[in-house]
Every structure is written in C-alpha cells, then in structure tokens.
Length: 218
Ligand code: DC
Image (tube, rainbow, N blue to C red; front, side, top):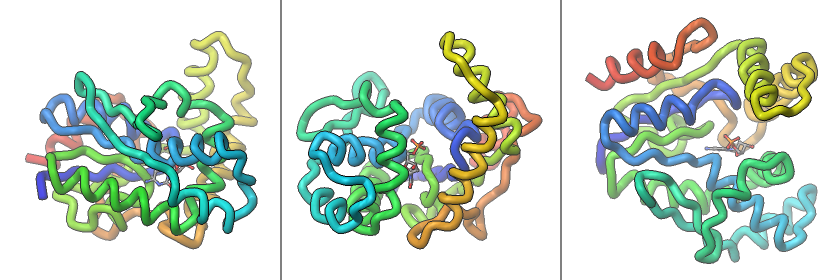
C-alpha cells in the first residue's frame, strides 16, 4: 500500500479542486472516483439500459471494460479502450450515474478498481465512500463539506461564467435533494468516517482548505 489521502463529501464542496491541488503538491496520483461512476453510466446510456431497471444495470455493468490511465498527470478514463473523459461531465451522464451508482454490482466492480490503484501508488482519492469503504485504512481522511447555500452560489457563479442561465434557488433545491439521496441510499451512503477530519469550506478559500489538509499530512 502507498500513502493514501481520502476526501469524501457532498457534491459541490470542492473535493476535486482540492484533491488535485494536494496531489500536485505532494506528487501523488489523483483518483477521481466520480469519473468512474460516470464512465459506467455512459456505458449504460450507450447500451440503452433503462435507468430505473436495477436488474438490467446489474447485468450490463459486468460487461463494461473500464480502466484508468495517467497522461501528463491527468486521469484518463478508458471505456473499452476509448478515452471518454470529454463525455463524462454532462447532465445526462450525471443523471444516469445517480441511478446506477447505488447498484451494488456497479460499486463492487469500481471499488475493486479503486483499491487496485491505491495499492500501487500514493494517492489522493475523492468520492463519497473512500474513507468508509474503499480505503478504510487511509493515512488521512477528510470529510469536506460546505453549506448548501455556499455550494449553490459556487455552482451558480460557474454557470454564469460559462454564459449559461441559472436560477440560484433551484440549484440549491437540487443540491439539497441530491445530498438527501446520497446520504440515505442503502449501499455505501455518504457519511463522515469516524476517524475523518471535518473541514467546512463555507468560509474558507481554496488555499486555506489545501493548507489545512496538508498540515494534517505532516
Ligand atoms: O462526484 P461526481 O458528481 O462526479 O459523482 C458522480 C456520481 O457518482 C454521483 O451520483 C455520486 C456517485 N459516486 C459514488 O456513488 N461514489 C463515489 N465514490 C463517487 C461518486
């Protein structure tokens, strides 16, 4: 096992931004587990699997060939050998992922891949169940959160910057519903591991959050 830093938390708390910064500073590999759940979702969409049909998802996910490569320090997700990174950050894929990620067969397959990566290298891994399920013995565990209001405002500003229309109240409502689903699902719900350090980034800058985590690694 290499050194491992686990960062869990709700959507929009800034996990990937922070995890990338820490990985760069420490020269570790950044493992984005959400991208793996999204790649599985893309596979299911391409194979016309009904998002509500758990049995169909369970059957289909076995066939998906998902692997990870690193190119210039960037994680590249390969689906049947194809780099699918550019297709993963869409609403359609995100919606399918929220239906397929609770299915145990999907989780078993991807958790195995994540554990394999961590056994070979020093990693910063982010997700929902890293400190609780994937790497229960991680050297440092962080539960990174922020108020739903702060997360909604960040998402709102991001959309404005892209020139898209956005309704902040609607975004906050979506965030609250998504948190509720993530925290109350039957398998591997989002929760803070007992030995994880809670970091609330509501009133912290990105640099302050990174510094706090780096100090915990020392
Ligand atoms: O963090 P994200 O938006 O890229 O995650 C995509 C989906 O995968 C989201 O529905 C949460 C789920 N997920 C999960 O269940 N477990 C993880 N370790 C990472 C993501």
